Length: 272
Image (cartoon, rainbow, N blue to C red; front, side, top):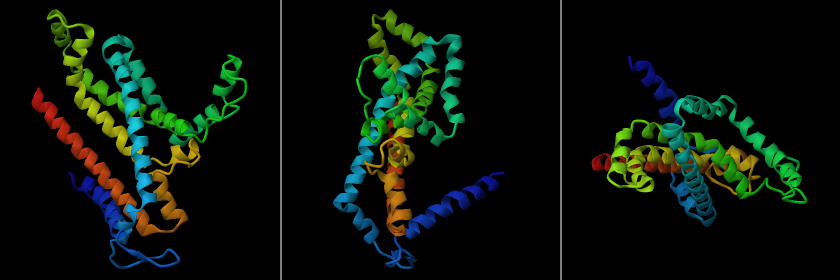
């Protein structure tokens, strides 16, 4: 019964990955054609200053996105799990609705909102906060806003899934033993929800490292990150081996993130 799934996994996941990995060691001619051969130069070139700066930019953007999503997503998930009551299903549905709309359309909406003639600028002018429209598009802040908007639901759902099984009597026991709300949260609720927090961080950080559309549409492509770099190497510079090397390295970074998540999860489980 597993044969169809294994066949699809092999044809559409493993084989393309093997092809990309093979290309990452290949040669290229002056016209951009891939030549058979084996070289490590494609990986050595990634240690140049220009490429290292791209990795730094990608890590900073992904880390900032993850931190903001956790700071916003945890209180939202906590409210839905413990305070929303009968409204919880409706709130979860509201978080799912954006996924029913095409990703590019949702990000393009932010282009309209953040534009000089957009709703945010016009609202600020109407309230007297500013006198002239402010240029928000093409900035790091606009990119960060788009990233948080895109990945925030991926933060809320795993944390909510980790909070709902927590027995309310455990929090009541903490209060009976003299712990205040903050201490009960730090010593009871937060430790028990750490698996969801780790999962949320993984779900946000890994795709944030390789996202392409958001930095281009909202950031104007000024901050080159790994997703932009891969597209440019493949399509603009016709350097397929180098683009494949960056793709493989991004895949390895994702794998390391998964391993760290599994290790942290085992430690949390051992503490229970």
